Length: 179
Image (cartoon, rainbow, N blue to C red; front, side, top):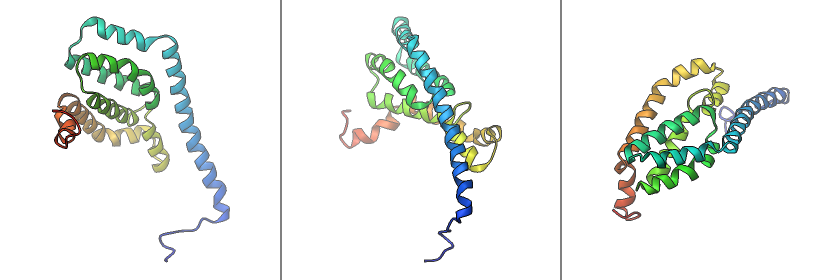
């Protein structure tokens, strides 16, 4: 086997690689720690429960509820890490979605797509920080480069949210879900 595909790392390069890995890990852990702290504060102050009660009390329709959910999750994606958002928001938004007759699979996919959009925009977008570390580009420069893809993801989010047949047609066709 040729050495052009698998290059050996020299012993003198190991400290540099370890330091680079430590820097990347520290950056990501700092972001996740701050997001978890924010998540704890929101939960401690019962903000998600108050938001769920407000949504039920205002009598939102399905389309308006889905718009509010998307805006809420996109805003949360600005300051929180995805697992925190899911742990806090899913138990509160899911019962409201069920009361409004939204398919659980559809609602779950909406949440996942929102989380991915959140991973790709600052200030907490972990994917941006990982890409920044790999490409050695600044966050601002990288955000500008990602902008067309982020817009594409937002268009996809709107389609997924308001045209559930896109998501549910195949499982229904295969008999995995009732029509």
